[in-house]
Amino acid sequence: MNEDSGSTGEDSSSAEEGSDSEEESEEQPESEEFPKPEEKAASPPTTPRAPPSFSRFIMIFLGLLAVYAIISPDVGIGFASIANVALFPVIGFGGALPTLTILLAGILTTTISSVIRDHYTNWVKMARTQKVMGAWRKEQMEAMRKGQTTRLAKLKEAQQGFMKDTMEMQTTPLKSMAWTLFLFIVIFTWLRLFVDVVLNNHGNQWIAVPWSNHVYLNSVYVLPSWVLLYSLLAIPFGQIITRVLKYVRFRRRLEAMGVPLRPGPADAA
Image 1 (cartoon, rainbow, N blue to C red):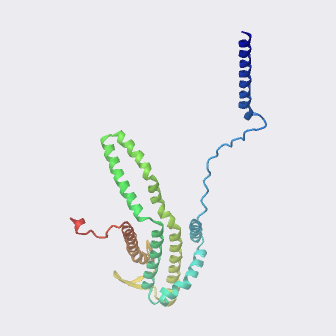
Image 2 (cartoon, helix red, strand yellow; image 1 turned 45 degrees about the vertical axis):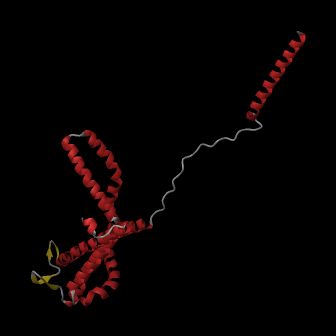
Image 3 (spheres, one colour; image 1 turned 180 degrees about the vertical axis):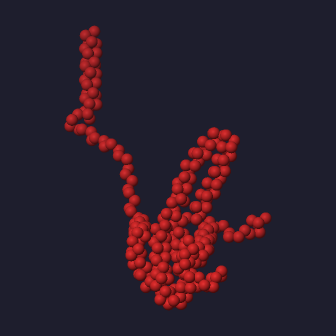
């Protein structure tokens, strides 16, 4: 009995020592000798800011120059004097052909402004956005007519998908406005000086048009006659240039997609 009790006592003491040693081994990593490194709080990734666009700076600068030229006529005259160095030898014709000069000035202005507008406009994306908006408005009107509130809610959610494209389509003309406005101010000021100074010195301010044999270029019919003549010649040509550029853009997109420009016999059938 004593041996058994002694053995059990030794076993219990050894078990207690084993448990104490295990507790010490478990508590050892938490001691001050081996401190755990503090975990840093995960910070959200910072998105780098886009560098300022040089083209945006140029647009703002030209817009300010255009406004300044409108406010101060001397500034516009200074720009026109600089443009005269290049324009008068090319399209001035010494003041002998005023109608042709005004025509070429209108063609030059509308061509440059059309090319700038084409550069900033995604015609394919604009056409797709217009189609989507037309279909959406049609569905909205039908849902409103039938009083389908659930359908209207779904259409409102769908509107968020193309809202960004719609805003981009509306702001696209603003991107080329600074270039176009500055160009028009320079050309119009140059034409005004051409009519008032060059043609006046040559005594050649009268032109013939289809509806009259003698039209004084400085006579005012809401606008001066030379401005009306400029608009009559420049606006239709600008529409032609715009349509040609749009055709080229769509044709390149179709070629990139591998779509034939004209339907074949199988497609026509």
